[in-house]
Length: 207
View 1 (spheres, rainbow, N blue to C red):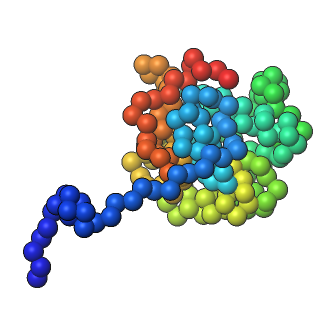
View 2: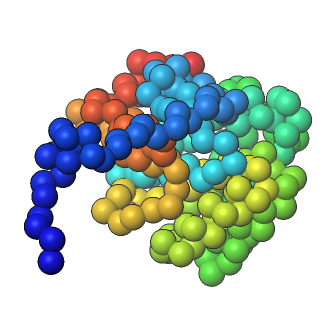
View 3: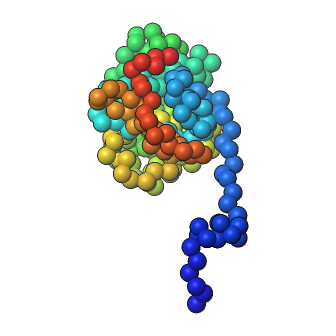
């Protein structure tokens, strides 16, 4: 058996090549929140991917976070599908935020079929974005959503309880919203870049 050699010794002796990861090109899906875009390696939502938004409780601003993106997409006549939202959306409020409601479609599915419905919409190639609030989504289900988003070239927004933060997720981007002491966006995972050490203020960066 060969002797154990410390990695630092190999690096110092230049016997191991240490490369840098290829930079992730900026995408074309800005979040509408400049400070959040600046914190993300893709300068916005990752293209054709699922973004997981973790919440301490409902109503901490999760829809406000994505409304600028939904407004941009629907104004471009690109369909957005909302799968079984936990509450009835306020259409007037969404219109005031710039959404073209004619491009917003709602799917009401039983809990057992919520993930299936979201997956089909993501994979269809006809949706610009799909929003879903699954109560039960394991790693396998999240991976299926991610693959479907890639196949359909769509943005997937999956809203989940923050207790799932402790579990691994295939989503390229995971952000957590916090309400105390101040509303903030924590980037917990961002493929292609380092996780910022500080949160992005949420209340004072209105688009």
